[in-house]
Length: 482
Ligand SMILES: *[C@@H]1O[C@H](CO)[C@@H](O)[C@H](O)[C@H]1NC(C)=O
Ligand SMILES: *[C@@H]1O[C@H](CO)[C@@H](O)[C@H](O)[C@H]1NC(C)=O
Ligand SMILES: *[C@@H]1O[C@H](CO)[C@@H](O)[C@H](O)[C@H]1NC(C)=O
Ligand SMILES: *[C@@H]1O[C@H](CO)[C@@H](O)[C@H](O)[C@H]1NC(C)=O
Ligand SMILES: *[C@@H]1O[C@H](CO)[C@@H](O)[C@H](O)[C@H]1NC(C)=O
Ligand SMILES: *[C@@H]1O[C@H](CO)[C@@H](O)[C@H](O)[C@H]1NC(C)=O
Ligand SMILES: *[C@@H]1O[C@H](CO)[C@@H](O)[C@H](O)[C@H]1NC(C)=O
Ligand SMILES: *[C@@H]1O[C@H](CO)[C@@H](O)[C@H](O)[C@H]1NC(C)=O
Ligand SMILES: *[C@@H]1O[C@H](CO)[C@@H](O)[C@H](O)[C@H]1NC(C)=O
Image 1 (cartoon, rainbow, N blue to C red):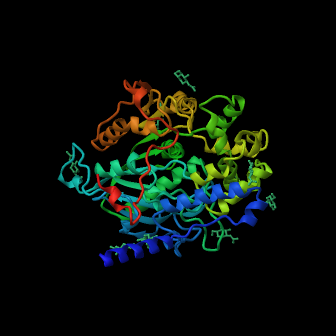
Image 2 (image 1 turned 45 degrees about the vertical axis):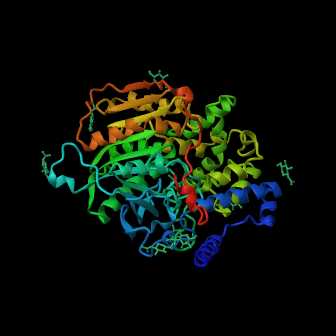
Image 3 (image 1 turned 180 degrees about the horizontal axis):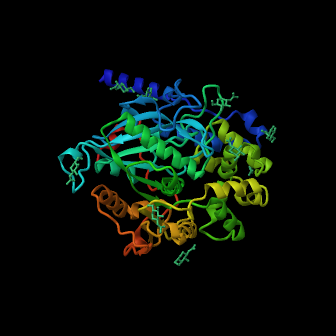
């Protein structure tokens, strides 16, 4: 008995060493964040730390073999077997992490990290013969917005952030899940100490991260299939859409198609729409991501230098970056700010550099390689259905895309994250069909389907995910009993 108590106390002490950054009051005060704002921010940072699987992990220090002329898709370091003690990954599944070289919007080499979630046994395509069975089907996943700070990398989270929404079910179904942390998240600095900024919604950049993570993973792990499907949601939905467009000029072999769920394909257009109609309930949340957009333009065009921010907006952003806060902290840090009027300068999105950036990063309206399955929620309050339809229609109207299969499935009444769950059977079967070798006719008919939910009124709805999968504390293991 005594030894159990001692072991428990030891565990408590060990875990309490999990120190959390606290906002320096002097710094915060000089950044227009009073005591209430500081307390909120500290709460956000502590919560995020409680969700991390690792802290100050040397895995995310840039590998010494990274050089500016390192080839995109090169493996820089491999952790073949990740210790899952601090992850909530289902039993049977295993994980690897690796560092690889990717490129930013201008094609400059940058290091980044990724994780692989391995199934216990692979999915066996229905038409396969024994020689192809030994390869494990690969799904490349583009995650949604996590934040722009150094610790906002999904590979560093206990539940990999999308947990039972996407990675766990796909790996449990026998797919190897290759998931880049986008450049700037995770591996956050070059060896000389220069910060690698995350260019949020710079979709061609995130499409590069996907492509290079696939190339690197296949070179490091020959057990992986050459064939792969790309899938993403929200920021990642735009990335997977951009990947289908990237295939036109920089094809990665083995591509079987892409799924894009709730893509924020034209973010600056959505900002314009929100300011034109500030009361539209589907555009309200747009105001909350102006900070990430202004920082993203600066990441891709450093000379822009955050000039869209108000003084208050810039100071709050500096706190967020100084302490490495992600989305939860960002929500609390800006809780006392009128997001529509106090973060960005009036009309900041009309600036020439912003518009140049918007034209480069938007997806939709370019030639692409299908099949492409776009999934949207009718009542998405983060990415308006109009945004998704606008991109789909623009791609659809291009004559070059006439022979590419493109489907849009709109789910009645569903919000941003519920759409992924509502469409679960659709995307799961679509992925299996690609590996089964089922061919979708490319007859120039781009279909749009409206899916009704007969029991819709009874479902839970929220802009945010309806899951929080956490490790039990050492004294709380009993809570994990049924
Ligand atoms: C798991 O978390 C504990 C407490 O933060 C830490 O001491 C330990 O090193 C971590 N283990 C691994 C394998 O990351
Ligand atoms: C902090 O500022 C907010 C408004 O920005 C105000 O509502 C609140 O009362 C202030 N709190 C303190 C302790 O000054
Ligand atoms: C994983 O890490 C834990 C400490 O967090 C350690 O006790 C355990 O031995 C490690 N497992 C392996 C296989 O290295
Ligand atoms: C079986 O696998 C081999 C090697 O991958 C391939 O050449 C052959 O076409 C496959 N046969 C069928 C029926 O799929
Ligand atoms: C640091 O290294 C990166 C990558 O090699 C380079 O792009 C950047 O200019 C360097 N920064 C400084 C201040 O030398
Ligand atoms: C990318 O190229 C543009 C010119 O096309 C340039 O203005 C910008 O500074 C470059 N961005 C970076 C991060 O070097
Ligand atoms: C960016 O603007 C700040 C003032 O807000 C200034 O101090 C800094 O020198 C500028 N940096 C560049 C690269 O223009
Ligand atoms: C897209 O096209 C469909 C079918 O023509 C139309 O009903 C819808 O209004 C269009 N949406 C947008 C945003 O262009
Ligand atoms: C059909 O797709 C191919 C690429 O797969 C492309 O080369 C060709 O131009 C397309 N045809 C038309 C009519 O757009």
